[in-house]
Length: 212
Image 1 (cartoon, one colour):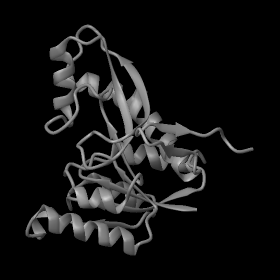
Image 2 (image 1 turned 180 degrees about the vertical axis):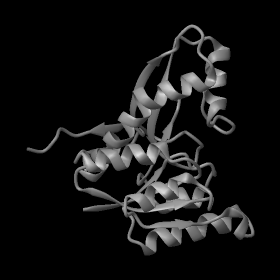
Image 3 (image 1 turned 90 degrees about the vertical axis):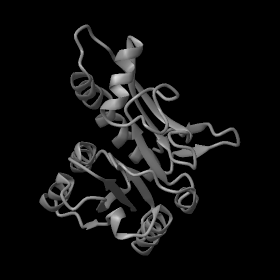
């Protein structure tokens, strides 16, 4: 059984999607062992408590710089024998060394179809504002492994979502969550825990057939 840590900063809607999927038995060979928040006020901590999941707060301002924070975070996760790190609305960009400490063991969900509307500065509502400004007719979500390039790691799963007339960033954000993020993230986590994901020399993710 693989131990999963979910890193959060806010409300934790993607965390809730993972918790719900776990309760439905959809995450095979894995369990959420830790919820770690960068904010003591994150509602995600309440979600963890209500579901009996161990939680921890590590604030960046309690460390001298980003390098020190990332190193302490990596040490904490290693000490707790975490197999998979899931970034679910974690609003801090971690260091290259953190990514290297967990190669192809960190999964992030991004609210767009990478390589569109991604990289530094593209987070939260900013992503959906950019999509609407560009006039795209399709957007969506991407679940990918994390490497040293922001939003540049190998893509695991993607799902398309229609952009509709009259959409606001808030309306589009909700539709992308409901139709893509909350479905793709638990599926990718389960694939990882089932050892069905592999990354080739070109950085392409392959998903093995389900074992009978």
